[in-house]
Amino acid sequence: MDCVYTSLRRRPEVPPAAVGEVAEVVGILWAHTVPEDRLEHISGSLDGDRVDLLLYFLSPGRTSPAVHSPLERAAALLARGHQASPALKRRFLPPAAVPCPQAADLRRPKA
Image 1: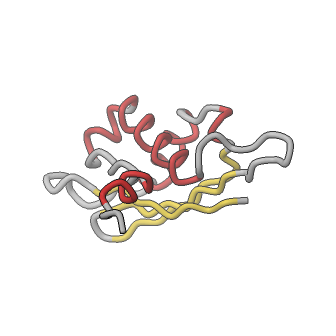
Image 2: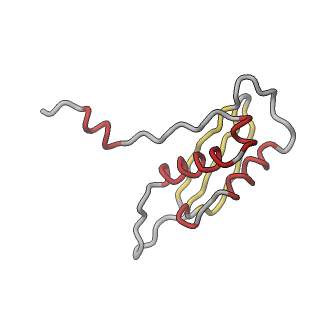
């Protein structure tokens, strides 16, 4: 199993969290999960201006290697949920994209 820690940051103009906000965020993410995500569990907590999330993904099997890393799957799930949910759009800033490790390699000078 692979675990990814991520957060959704509250929009500055949105008041502090309401009771049940974490459960609502978790429910919205579950509603927008697809089988390819291989999501097993989500837990979350409030921390000031954000909701912190732990996303647990099934590791790829030996016979079916993963096409996307856990970080990519987490980013895709957050983006999908934010895009589709008026509640997430209204309360939270869009999630940041996952940095591409290959892009960093391309920027390094050749020795």
